[in-house]
Structures are given as C-alpha cells and as structure tokens.
Amino acid sequence: MTTPTPRPRAARPVAGWLPGYRKRLLRGDSLAALTAWALIVPECVAYAQIAGVPPQNAFYAAPVALLAYALLGRSNFLIVGATSAAAVLSASAVGDVSSDPGQAVGLSAAVAVIVGAVLLVAGFARLGFLTNFLAESALVGFLFGMALTIIVRQAAKLVGVSSGDGNFFERTWAVLSKAPDWSMATLAVGASALVLLFALERWLPRLPASLVVLVLGLVVSAVLGLKDHGVEIVGKIPSAVPALHLPDIPAEDWLKLLGGALGVALVVFAEAYSIGGRLAREHGQEIDADREMKAVGVANIAVGLVRGFVVSGSASRSAAATAAGGRTPMTSLIAAGLVLVTGAFLTPLFTDLPEPVLGAIVIVAVRGFLRVGELRRYAALDKPNLWVALTALFGVLLFDLLPGLLLAVALSLVLFIAAASKPHVAVIGRLAGTDVYVDTALHEQASTVSGVLAVRPDGGLFFGNAARVKLAVRDLVLASQPQPSAVVLDITATFHLGVPVLDALEELREELERDGITLHLAHIRAHADRSLQRHPLAAHLGPERVHRTVAEAVAAAMD
Image (cartoon, rainbow, N blue to C red):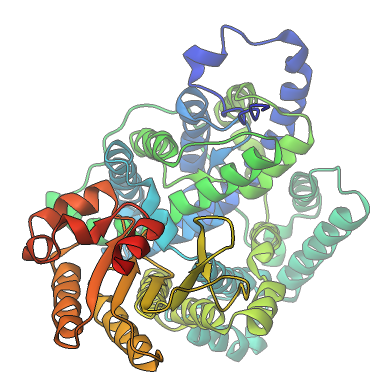
C-alpha cells in the first residue's frame, strides 16, 4: 500500500528557513517586495486617516509589522500591515473611549498592544479553534457593512464636506444634505482619481494603480496649486523612523479599551488567518492557527510600542506579492527595508497629496468587501447563513462595527446550538457480509434484527440535545412493530459524556425497562467511558450491556 505524501508545512520561523535560503528565489522575492511596497506606501497614508492618526504613524508601524511577522510567522505568502478593517476597528475602539484627536495616537497604540497580548496569550493557550465560531457568513456581512461605512466617510472627502457623526444612514444623509456646499474642484479631483483607478485595474492590471494615482495626484496638485482652489491636502508629514515609545495613557483608559480590543482581536486574526490559510492551501502548504495567533499577536505588540495602530493580514498585498513571484518571508524582510527608507527620507514628497485622491484610493481598496454575489448565493442555498450575514451587515450600519460583529457572532452561535440540539436519530442495520451498520433510510439493503432496535444519533450528545435524543428513541420504539425487546444506542459521535447526558440516558434506561426493554450502549469512547463509570448508569447497565461495537451489542441483545 502506498503511503500518502504529507502536505508540506508552511515556513518555519526565520532561524529555520533563512540558513537554507536559496539565491534563485531572491529575484522573485525582490519583485514581490517592490510590488508590496508600491501598495503599502499609498495605503499607509490612507489607512492612517481611517484609524484617526497622523500618516507618519503608519510609516512607524509598517516596517515593524513586516519584520515581526517575517521573523515569527509560518506563512510564506502573508503580508502583514495596516488594513482597512483593522484601521476602522481601531478607530471604533478608540472612539468609544475618547473623541479627542490629540489622544488618538496613544489610544491607538494601546489598542494594538492589547490586541497583540490577547492573541499571544490565546495562541499559547491553543485557542485558535475559536475562530471557527466566527462564521464565514458573519464575516461576509460584517465586512460588507464595514466597507459601506468606510465608503460614506470617504465620499465626504470626495466632495469636500464633513460626514459628521452617527451611524451609516445618518452620515449618508449628512453628505447628501450638504450638496449645495460640495466643492466642484474637490469632486473633480476625486472623481478623476476613481475613474483612473478603475481604468488602470481594468486595462493595466500589472501596474500598482494606487501608487500611480498617488504620484499623479501629487504632480497635478503641485503644478495646479489645488490647495488654492479649495482642495484639501495632506500637508507636511514628518520623517518617520520607528522608535520605542510606550503608549502614554492613563491606567483607566487601558481598562476601557479592553472590551473593544477583544472584538478587534477576533476580527484581526480571522482576517489574517483566512488569507494566510487560503494562500498556503493554494501552494500545497498548511499553517497552524495557534502559531499564527502568536505571530500576529507579536506583530501587533511591536507596532503598538512604536506608536502604530492595529495590523492584520492584507489580502490585496499578499495576493499581489504572490503573483509577482514571492515565495518566502524574504519578501516581507525586503519590503520592510523599502518602507523604512521611504518613511525616513521620502515623506516630504506627500505634502501636496490631495485628500480626495486618498479617499478614492480607500474606496477602491475596500470595494472587494461588497460581496453581493455571496449574499445572493446564501439567499439561494442557505437562508440561515443569509440571516447571519444580514444581521452583521445591518448591525454595523445601525449600531457601529463591534456591536454589529457581536450580534452576528451571537446569531451564529444560536443557529449552531439550534442545529446541534436537533440531531436526526437513524435506525441502523447491518450490510450483508459485514459488521458495518448504516442508516436503513439510505441503504435499502441493510438488514435489521427482529426484536432489536439499533439507532444512532447523527451528532454527538450534549446537554442541549440529550432530552431530544431520548424522546426520539422512545418514538422509534413506539413506531416499531412488533415492539423490540432491546434497544442498541450507538454513540460513536460522542467524545464526552457530561452529567446531563448521563442523566438523560439513565432516564431512558428506566423508561425502557418499565416496558420490558433493555438498553445497550455501543461505541463508547475512552474519555466518555471514564465519565460513564463514575455515574450510576454504569452499575445499572453492567459490563454486559456496554459494548465496543454495534455488532457485539446486537449479538448480546439477541441472547
């Protein structure tokens, strides 16, 4: 028999992959780094504005995030840095504590440190599985609502007015009601930037569209003096070299940030892990959720200690770098050096950058989250997940980001528990010539034994479904003609028997025995068996009615 070839794991930390690095990979990694740099530079300025911090703070964070993940991360392809989701979540968490722009830098850095610490501790505690409870549909709806929220805020920059405060609908009305005050010059610049971005993506997809538009915006602004025509510009950006700087905020603010930071940590890791995992699978690799938690956690702590804001995995940069030939974490190391040079020496070049150009870059960057096709697919195939997505979407639009996310997570858990609490209990029979027992409703050739009712719940037993399973077994007994003398309950899908489950099984045994029917258990897992032996049910059944297989149980029941 041929042994299957194991799937290769993703890159080990730097000490594992760097000594064996091959020079032939350097060209592809270098091109990928240049591609990533071309996206990072304009997005640094844009996402800093979303996060509510000065642009230089994004340049502090970017090289540190790239370096930290390259040293500790396990994905060959993930590019870590500022993202629209991380920036807007950071701003939301900070806004719950203070609306003072002067405190935004310290609070944003503190959020990053808390998020990093939460992920680091969770990684050591092996809690990576928790991301499975953030349903994909919840993430789709959350990101859709987040994108709409970002778009309406940036649309205000495209027309030269303020969107004010409030939820998505209030901000939208604020922008539209100020139509007489719109700046035609600002609108012309923003609309031109949008058209050019879409045109470049459509006809010249290999060019870094956002960098091209940023450079053209700078040139046009300087030549035409757009500032003198009422177009807002970024202004002077100081040189940005990362330096250690602990968040200088009061102790009580750390506590106030904790609740929001927990939600940010969940989304940040879900975003990074989903992107890294998808790219790894496409190249025949695997990454470990717990180890990725630690790496992303350290990256966030590191950026928080240099006055940065929350970082995550970037889908656009990761995909672009991979397409350009990036195959190892060397891509991130080289990109970190390029961004560091840019922050140290080239930030004065961004002084004349028009704000509507930045708004256009952000709008195009987040439009990929508007996954209308996915919502249509849910509507056609999976109504419960459609409701989860819509709950997240409208929760974000009405109540802000984190409340919308929590609503979606809560609904996901409710649907999960509701589904798990209603398991189908199948009547099982033996396939001819084997000791394999299968669902008789699906296999007509499966045969049952007269006088013995063998049944199997489709899922594991737990406190939420034990009573329902007991009633389902009783209904099957009543529907059997003639009445069986024994019931065999196959619990192969149950790995833990809690007290509520054991109590329900004891009640089932008592009810069956009152009707002269014996209960036999089959396929008891080792851990479940230890729990069983500590419960009175074990003594009442005795070893003669607890079996390793269904075949043994049926044979014993026939004696």
